[in-house]
Image 1: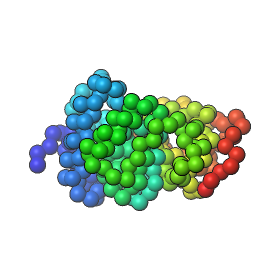
Image 2: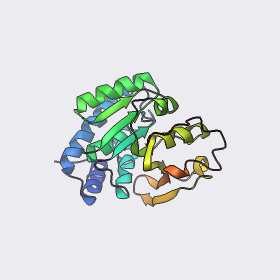
Image 3: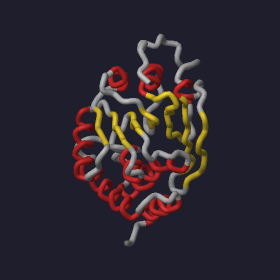
Amino acid sequence: MSHSHQQQQVYDFLTAFRVADPDRVINSLSRFHQLLQEYNPQVNLISRKTPPEHVWLYHFLDSLLALKCLDFEKQMILDFGSGGGLPGIPIRLACPQVRMFLLEAIRKKCLILRQMLDRLNIKDCRVINQRLENYALSAESPRFDYIICRAVAMEERYLPPLRQLLRRNGKVIFYKAHRLDDIANLRYQTLLEEDVPGLGFRRILALDRNDLVGSLSKATNNLNTERI
């Protein structure tokens, strides 16, 4: 199977980290790429300024970088602010035993996410059309090992519901480049920090559940009953 330069870079990444059946993953990502191009004119799932050939690196490889420093297999993961299913769908394709939840507040995006999951035949991946604060209070919301945030700036109001949704040893995972303004006052751990060919400088950062309070969070926590 011949790959474009960008596809080959993703393929090499998958093989380097011993992802099972990288050809299957590349084929599924190729289909996902087609669906993003099909649906993006209807609803802005990814930036329309991104050339189609750059999606492989800017969105797929970038989404998969967390595999370099985290073991997601058999974990419960919430993709907060999923948008076009990034990073949740690429991670789910690379880690088939993950239970992935895609949380997105915009209904039109959720409708398209469900259609894409169906057309990609992805199981154990659920789309949640709610705001984070409401989902944290929902009786049906599970507790997660990881909450991943790729295109979300941290705000004061997010801290209590994020804490509420994590298991006792859970972590919030941030995808960042240079700017860290939104989490600068929180105690985070740097899991990955490197220049990635074709992408530039990238960071993967983690916040423990117990660190989702502190100097950024001075508001009263309205989520009084925690369900572990």
